[in-house]
Length: 250
Image (cartoon, rainbow, N blue to C red; front, top):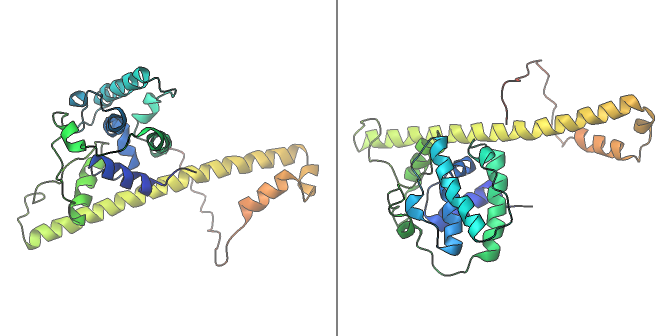
């Protein structure tokens, strides 16, 4: 099993000295380009754009990444059309594969990500770790459109001066970040629930076509159903309110 999102983000930010807060932000292609640059150190990082928020700009970054794959004969298809949509699952799977590739081929030694990034449309990140509130503030603003954040924002937000007003603004930004995190977790939950629901429907269809399948307690279908319908102590199945959101896709 691959690393979790939190583990991947921690590794990514440590390697590249970035402040990425969501896996979806890898859909810009910028951070992915620099991961492979840390291995080969021959990507034209001056042409990689970090602070962009359009699919056209993302495509330019992915062209650089694809050229890297061709040059170094990396036998892996880059699913550009899926990644640039900045959806969590697509970017998570590709980032997990990239991490495994990096573990195998990274040559070791120091990699000066900030120096390599200069001139790439992104200001250099501060070498010292940023305060927690500043880091979260940075991620919140960039995550809205999938940009790859590299710097801590200005001292004040929305014209609020330093001191008590700045502290209040930082808390507000932190709250916004937490809301975005919750929304991301809810999307992930619904994504996996929809897959379980599809499995349940397939099992029901098979049992309807052949009722004998459900009578065999040792059958595969029965075992899968046992897993699907098992609960933990203290868990209560919520009442079905009949509301189904068919509009949201993952």
